[in-house]
Length: 251
Ligand code: FE
Image (cartoon, helix red, strand yellow):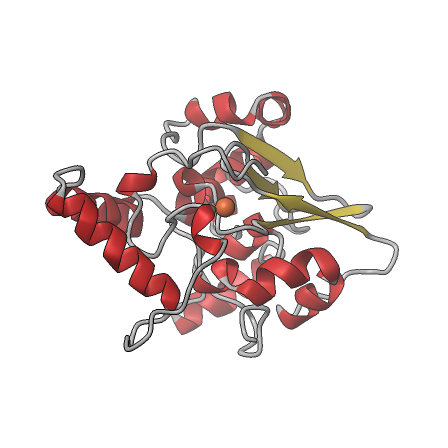
């Protein structure tokens, strides 16, 4: 981490989505305010930036709309599916994830320096931003609330296995856990293991197995059977949330 390095596009960050590392240091409680200290700071910053003419509210709205509707985990799922289906692409993703992801048309702010980490039976990867909420926007969209929560940020490094259990994920003791701390400079994409029983599937079909959480490392890719059940129930879809209500984001 380099807290002195400004986040790219800090001024244009959607309110509450990512206002930078420094907001976490020395945040003071605002007396007589119904807002929590973080919301109050974001609100105050936004008001100042608009008043000074640095930020145009309509532009911020467009940005938020983009990341809420157009950009999302379906981009990351397409990347993972291609890595599963195409060994050449997988090798490029391993060598230079930013370029490989850009070759699929995904790039931009918060995704300038991507690193892909690959799960295997021997090793499972988990991504966190211990200081704030750095997250690979171009492939995953905006981070879920629990990703930004203090409990997840601290526990993911202290007791990753317990955090995974909160998400309903129990890995064999023999699987080594590696936790990656995102920064303003480097964002990580977890490539989950390809589920068995998917031989011969095309990329579009494979992508439906790739959940958002599996690309953060708090989940696995769905099994073909899960997909059938999900279709019947109208969910869970690629952006499903934490598996348990008492998840890592709950204090
Ligand atoms: Fe961060």
